[in-house]
Length: 117
Image (tube, rainbow, N blue to C red; front, top):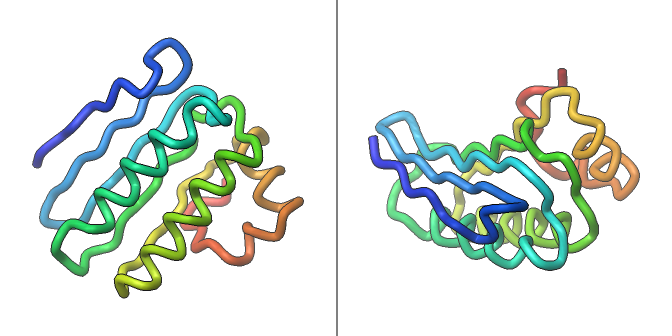
């Protein structure tokens, strides 16, 4: 298993990408906004571009704030995964900061949510 921590803006967000034989996981915690979303998007696109067909899970349970820039980063990653014939799954838990924006925008039904609480 390889893990790559990305210091996008370490005081506000922590993004870690790990790959194993079962797939890849990108764990996100902190605030995803216009400042931090580009780094998250780039990380997700890099993981999606890696060779393989295993699912990619985005663990958002540690996210405390998600705005339109963050939603856009997730939507961009979703489109890239579809284009690459990869499965991108979102793990949200019961985090209202994530669940509510996804529901309000309709992305809740577009994304594959594997843990809804």
